[in-house]
Image (cartoon, rainbow, N blue to C red; front, side, top):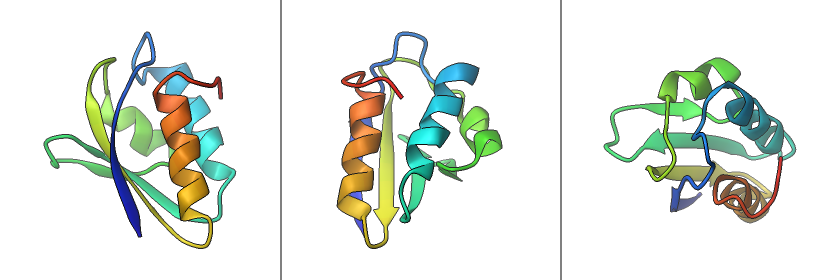
Amino acid sequence: MTKETITINLENGLEATPAAMLVQVASRYDSRIYIQSSDGAVRVNAKSIMGMMSLGLSAGENVVVEADGTDEQEALHGIEDYLSGKVAG
């Protein structure tokens, strides 16, 4: 299992379209991927659009991303690249 704290650098945070794109990015990987709010109150499956929408995260917020599986390192880097705004979904 791999964990990392990532800052959301998407202009509109994780509103509907960016959240859907994040689900698409997460779904590329076999690993289980979870995203947790920085206060630890909510933890959701990154492959679930309803879960991602429930977080309601804004630009500049930190999240903890956890990946567990055979491609966990690649998954974590892919999620980080998307959330940091380095690559489009």
